[in-house]
Length: 108
Image 1 (cartoon, rainbow, N blue to C red):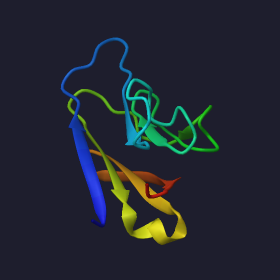
Image 2 (image 1 turned 45 degrees about the horizontal axis):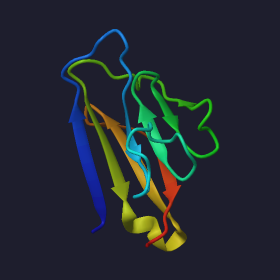
Image 3 (image 1 turned 180 degrees about the vertical axis):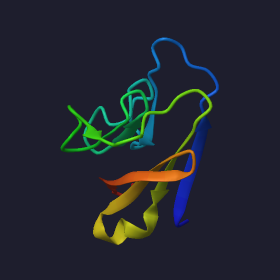
Image 4 (image 1 turned 180 degrees about the horizontal axis):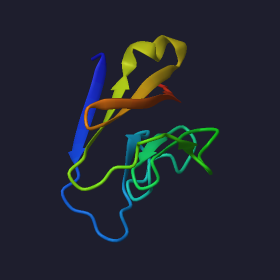
């Protein structure tokens, strides 16, 4: 496996448009937003930010990355970087790549 990808189509939003997707480890609490704890990365669509180790408090601003109803968001993890101990995590909004991140990788 070189990469894995998943996509989410935003079909409905309410007043509190809070959603995120990202890469987390196997034992991560599924009730927490991705990037809440170190070793994970998340794209928070309501803020248009990438949250990762080193910026998990404030997030990294990404121009034009806020997503709304009808948008297609995606996360792709590229395992080609594993020998270096990190994997690339790419995020997409309507098929357009927004800034990438990386996360430490340890095989269990």
